[in-house]
Length: 106
Length: 345
Image 1 (cartoon, each protein chain N blue to C red):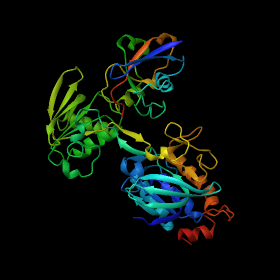
Image 2: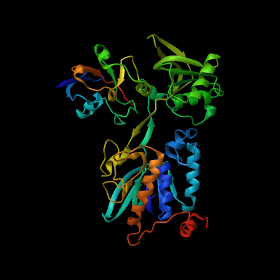
Image 3: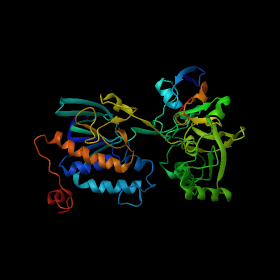
């Protein structure tokens, strides 16, 4: 089973099982991870599932698409490792992925 | 205000879909009251993008949000709907029997409205601008930090920082430019998701030195008694500097807050109201949900889809309002009875 670790703004860490093919956002909602709101339900239309990808994982997760970059304009405290978690698909290559959730989504 | 108002259908939300519902219900002799948290009719069309062109309203190659609202208001005028604006529906009780229910609605202004059917046309719920998580920002809000422009005059001769890269940010940068002393646009990247002509107009002003563009993000606010004196901006290279200013307008889009609807006993799915696609009725008989607030397989959040939903829901609502009357389908082009209702015959 693939694992994803979510670290919240206070530093608390939660590691959960993630299904290959699901998104990091869906995995968070399914596991009641706080700090991810996903108002639009994964349509890349709200920027409320913003996460920071741990530096050692940014290469594996890849870069944000043009549409995702546009939506990130509506997120706060955007950094070079910012992504929308609805746009990161869980794969075996991402087993052990670590993301941090921001202090506030929207 | 203890008086109980009585009507056939209470429509929660006076956006384009709530307004059009009045028309379709009116053709069926159903009277309506509308309740909306905004101080004017039109919902997001009137509040958020009154001047923005809409290109996908059937029969209108282009129409602005406000024009659409004005047209709808004209279209429903013959039916004399009653508006309760600037009020939020807080409570809803279901009285009566499932086959002939009665709904009692309470607003935050103390009004009570009883209706035989309810249309929830609340869009994204009561929507609010996203507020940047900058410590102490609330002390400046509505004094020198604004999420919308109520009075252009306020910005006369002021140094205004506009934050964001979307249409709202660019529109206000351009609109306030002739009024303000100086406009500075702050955005995290040198790319804008906005109408190309706005982006071009902004770039021309920046190139000629009439507007300033800063690549960065606002991290702190400075000032006293609600009046900003400067913003701390982190540039792309990571260094911070203080940018003197009088006002800031952050544009980070909106966030949807469903509000009290969650407490009315209607089944919800991820802050939306599931409905069927024949009558757009919720899990509570007699309560319909139309427009952006509802969900069903294949749902598209389009104004035109909402118009269709309201039309079909109105047909079904007739049964709750006139349980003993048979509904005969008629066209406005040929029915003199409908034309009389519209005041055109």
